[in-house]
Image (cartoon, rainbow, N blue to C red; front, side):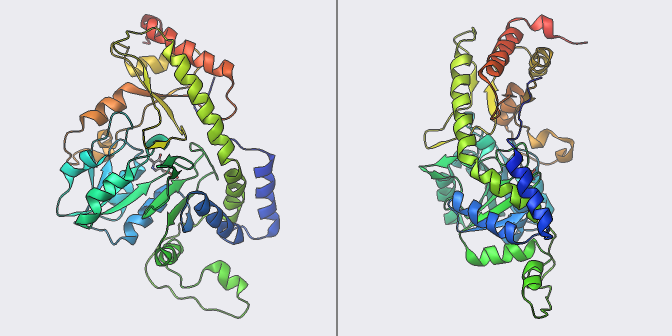
Length: 386
Ligand SMILES: *Cc1c(COP(=O)(O)O)cnc(C)c1O
């Protein structure tokens, strides 16, 4: 079975983790600090605050802004459900906005209609690594006193207007789950240029402590910490950070390989014989930036079999594809949650699927995927189940 994703993990990561274990310091410590500095530099941000996941990072970002009950935060429904959940954790209300069909992202024109007097922030997602047009959103939001938070879970190494996604971000949250390009098993990061915010975020991830446990340990003289506010335990471990540092050194190579494979996918998919009026469209760079191709989504052509049938057909032919990006408002957890109509989101989630793309993928693997897709689209009766 060709998997949809396989993390690029080698002996170097195993050794780095072992070294952290042997050092005797396994909780948040010197390796976390080093990883924060290296990661923030790589995405063009002034400060990095490592956390246990992107989900907890997003929660801290919303909490930091003082957003809570009675407030609204605009999010795309077309995202992993953690985007909307992070707003709910604060007691605020996530307000779903529709997305652009070409990028899968919020735009100023999809967000504008859902802004209200209660809107405190917009959480824009660089979905599947495709950069969103953040400047246009800031131009809409900043004059109204609305903050723009970036869910950059998938976007390490993507670029926007020639700079890494994350450059000039007010607050951006990143994921190191194995489904993303860099992994620490679980893990995340919040980046910001604001030094005071970075200090507060570090406190918020560590129980509201005035002095971090690592600094107390290294301080020599007995330091008694204070708990300045009610906060969280969202720390990353030094074992994870050790792995993250090695992973980060591979980021450029990972992206280069993904872009090479994506270019080949574009060529192969163009050869599948479908009605020329409705070609298979696949994710591409927007005009203002580049994607890291965290996920390679394709939009099925008109007249194609149902997406579930296509996935089953691919599975029968040895290809593990996935449904496209989920729509949070269609999940039971959001049943009854009021929302404006989201026609593009609903079409996007129903008509897209994600093809395998991973660093060690071979040309032969890719040929197998594309012939499986072609066969499935042309012989739907062979793939029906039940
Ligand atoms: C994966 C993902 C998250 C959650 O990341 P975790 O590190 O698993 O918490 C949040 N938002 C988006 C858009 C994601 O793709």
